Length: 409
Image (cartoon, rainbow, N blue to C red; front, top):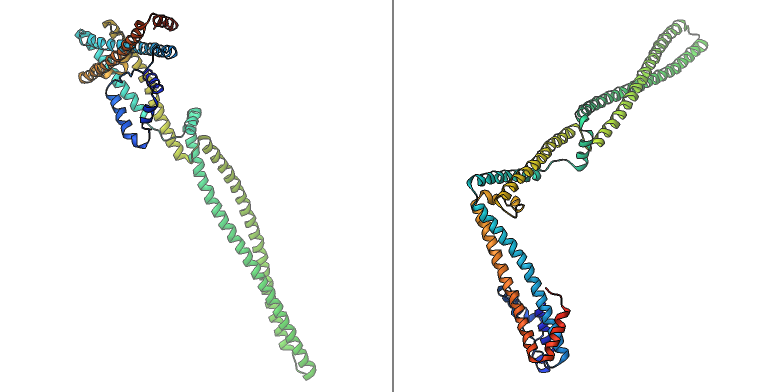
């Protein structure tokens, strides 16, 4: 910047004693630096003129070049400021035209503006809505929307069937365990019968041996005891054989029942496996955990879809209302018509219009101050150049030469 050039030159032109008097920047100068910054913010920066020896050709030429560069920068700033100033002035003229518009046209403008404000509020409300579904769920709803209702019903049926299959599996498992317990009970009874038979055989052999010993050793008549023992043994053996036969029959029946239970259990397990895989597929298809969640997500999607449609309709109506507003503003001679789309509230609320006008006036005042400041910079630089040019004819030639190297702003 021009101020930096002046300060740089002044620093280079300091004498050794001035340099020794300079206080180095440090933590102790933070408050002073802040005070200077605040002072710059409150009022325009004054241009400091460097200490230049104009009799020194090198210093003189460099100084003139910096002055011309400062003039160019200030003029560019003035051009930008004038353009912005013209825009602000144009806005204020447009407001004046709106204030002076005929009542009929003003009523049409207010009606269009009110419609725009209402549509903007509705669009903001719709855009602020949040729906409890993930992006993956939304894509699934979009891809399979026609069949979602059927799939919800199917998923419910599969879940109900799943519960029935689980109950059947529990019942079959209980039945199979009971049959296995019965089978083990038959095996235990059969083992008991074998043990009884062996014990009875041992007793009969011992009893027979004893009777034979009595018969041959003591000449005792054993006919009646022998017949009684034989009859008792026959009855016991008959009972044992009958129980063994019953056990064999029960074992055959139990084996058949057990095999049937295993067969049914395998069938149910197969159905369970296929049903689980179907459930997993459908839940993965829609990225849900059950039919209730699928129904809820689909409800969220339908609600969102209705509101998305309202957003599209609102955008169309908003564009139509904006075109009507622009057309009415153009008839009045308003130049900047598009800006009133975002400031439609000011067209229906006089207080808001006052705030807009006040803001524009403040902006214009600040631009005027900035323009005056940069114009002053140009004048000061021109005065300094004129002073050097008038000091010597040779300096005037240098000024002319340097000026020819700078483009006209």
